[in-house]
View (spheres, rainbow, N blue to C red):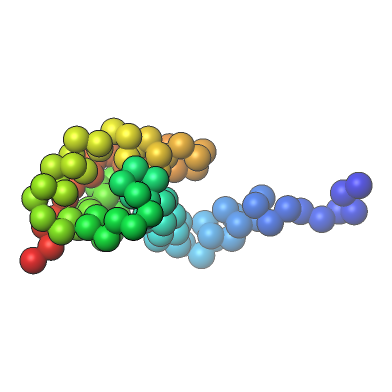
Length: 102
């Protein structure tokens, strides 16, 4: 039975768009999924890789050192696929850049 109620998942995209925060919400979702991807690919206890921000299709990831940066580079496609595997984020990420913590 429907009782005339709308599901929240159907209402949120409209509400987000009407307030003009779509870009910020997408960036937040991508960073959240990127944190999950780091745990999935490199392990739950990984503190060496940390997503910083998403802007203009580029996800910037901070790495403890250049060796971890190389690891991100080598698994970039797997990283992007994990983040984008759910519907609305498909095609959002054009590239992943690394920044060495320092």
